[in-house]
Length: 161
Image 1 (cartoon, rainbow, N blue to C red):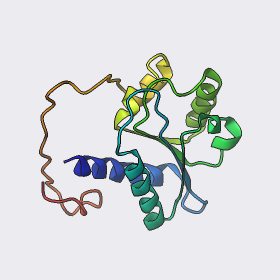
Image 2 (cartoon, rainbow, N blue to C red):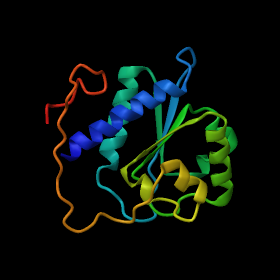
Image 3 (cartoon, rainbow, N blue to C red):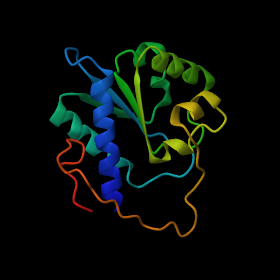
């Protein structure tokens, strides 16, 4: 089930990348996976999956846990930034300000899973991700996702359930 959810997230991210960048320009995406709280074991697999999507779809992928890349000059070379299972407070206020300017200038963003477990004290980020969560409730049930439209490009590679 986790693989299906990760695949759905990654498929959504791919669509976001192509909507936020000019296909005539070199497209480069930054995958940021720094954690200051819970660390998901799936981070390396997520990075590899996004790199594979890059190879298959013509965009470059850089990954880091170094928050110093969140400066205006470095962020300029990216079309989008992915927060992959980030957690806790991971950027200082200067890095936050530069990231805000990146988004306001048209840069793309995708937050995967625990990205909503990040930067609770930064109101702007909370609005960007749309909601926060601190942990999974005990006994979270496993869900079944049924694919109704196998012809859509976002769902063609998914299993029926």
